[in-house]
Length: 286
Image 1: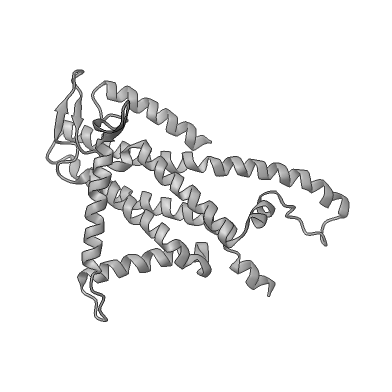
Image 2: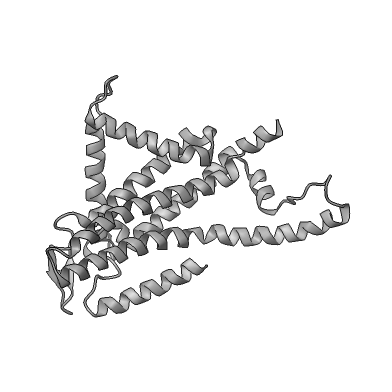
């Protein structure tokens, strides 16, 4: 809840800052694709950046891992390093049983978010564009994760995937039991207290459901706030001194890009592992 409030305040502050000439808190509409009479799909600068960077990323990875060999080349080594790194990161969290089923999702989140976090540092991003009637610079390319619509879409995908994995590998009944079930041990708790704990754990489950719903807000606002804030920071530093001063902040953005991609991936892993990973409990039981 605190993060959601801080995110809303940050967006409000960004809108006020934009009025004074900072980076726009929302993406610019570049054109529209007509679908039917009276209805068209808007194309924004963040959508163009998302499509362009994602296409380049797909082509590059395909070229790097095109021919697998026992003695890997540079490209294959990079791909294998990413696979081993993400697998080693998520295995203790989601468990051995879910490493392979969840790898495509979690590795995709990490790589896509990382590259799009760094896309704001590419030459030409936020540079080319036109001036609108109000005197604001409407640039043609905007980092995808600096648009709240993109981060909200990523959070929605994570939420749907979480529900799929929980139902597929734990079951709907186990989910209800995990949320609302009595966690006390019948053998160690007096019967009267055990019965009294049922409504308490049910109330705790309702709170947990609210927490699950707010994951959409926390995941999306955290990623958006860091990338959008970094973009504003770079722009302000370049306005002050365009040649020397921005360099350490560019390095800082590289680090923040890695951290945010890792945090997003880890949080989604934790959400899945909290319900689906019970290997350690089974080991203790045996």
